[in-house]
Image 1 (tube, rainbow, N blue to C red):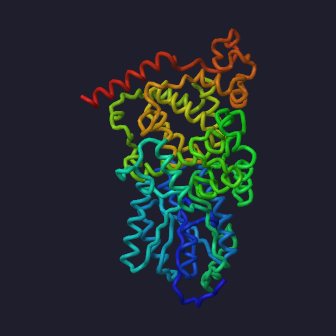
Image 2: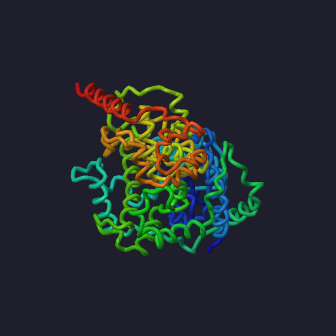
Amino acid sequence: MNSEPQSTNHALLWLRADLRISDNTALNCAIESGLPVIAIYISTPMQWYQHHISGRQVDLIERRLKIVKQQLNDINIPLLVLECDDFSTVPETIIQLCQQHQISAVYCNRQHGWNEKQRDIAVKQALITDNKHWYCSDDYCVVPPGQVVTLQQQMYKVFTPFRTAWLKQFLQHNYQPTTNSDKVTFSQHCLSLINDNLDDNASFQPFNYSKQDSLLWPVDEQAIQQRLQMFCETKAEYYQQQRDFPAIDGTSCLSPYLAIGALSARQCLAALIETQPQCVEINSHNGAFVWLSEVVWREFYNHLLDSYNRLSKHQPFQLYTHNIQWLENSDHVRAWQQGQTGYPIVDAAMRQLAATGWMHNRLRMISASFLVKDLLCDWRIGEQWFMQQLIDGELASNNGGWQWAASTGTDAQPYFRIFNPTTQSERFDADGEFIRQWIPELESVPDKYIHAPSLWSGFGGVNYPLPIVDHKQMRLLAIDSYKQAKTLHDS
């Protein structure tokens, strides 16, 4: 490591959704500049509320930052944690930091939401006006948005050809995780900042946000990497057979770490390929390829978000769905949120979400379909509720998932294909193990009736609601509502 005089210029590393020091493009660029590096993280409580970020995710971010702070200290990079109410005051705050700490260049990784892009434009302009340099790297996606396009240079609107083109790009280029240089330049000013901020309690004020416990998710580097390695070595091979069954621990549960950037998608794929090299065989149906496809779905939704700004603005991708006449039944919404719909698989899913901040992916599809197609509620109500609850809430994937379920998105579920919650329950939780775990009221219900307990002769003694709607009737109403909306749009 090299020490520089205190009067030297510094580089500023601005951490956002990239809370790691390994395989962090912006950090690598800042180090390679040869300047001593100061890192910052800016919390924006009012912006988080506007974006419906969950209290659990904010708690996870706070806990993870303490780990990252120590990791940065170890390579003589101080981490300053600041607060702005929202994005509007971030440019002024960064300019003040640059002047205070003699910073000549700012390094960060690109984000793809509309508000984040507008914030970055404002920061870049402020820096240019103040004769500072701005370097923003592609890092969140493995293959950057704009590089997977059709022959007409358009963004793909269907997933399968996108995946084929994405895999071709991935295999042609070296999208490997990067390692940090061990030649980190530092200054006496950096060392002073580190020494002044050694005590977390003194230097790291708790975020001004209504947080919830995220302790189910360890944040230290070893635990995260072990979880990734364990999945790749022992579960990825069986992912296709096990991923749809919520009572089986068959998924990776890495999504919270990807959402806050404690883990990169490049790291995930590198670990997968090392242990399951067959995963890159196009159109193979091994479990590892199916999991790789889930990573590519994440890429697909982020590329769409980057290409279509309306997805950040509560707008559907399929414009005709603006015309759907949603029912405004607050009692139904409340029953769905509280896991009191009378459909056990939906209620178990919603209770898991409320208790843990996480939900199995099959259950996300079932519960989303139920809100939109069985209750005919606006999908944006569900999208917002999920963001407020999920520890892994991330705009592109959450919006993409909800628009898929609501048949409002690109390459979405056709509107006439509607999940039957009882059939889904019978197929993916046949013996009711998951249902009984989250709905103890149904513990005594026989297996034969666990998916539709109101049909059981002993149901009168069970403290559980009757179904709040009739699936067959609501299915027909939903199909008719979509048909009418499409006819109105086409006329």
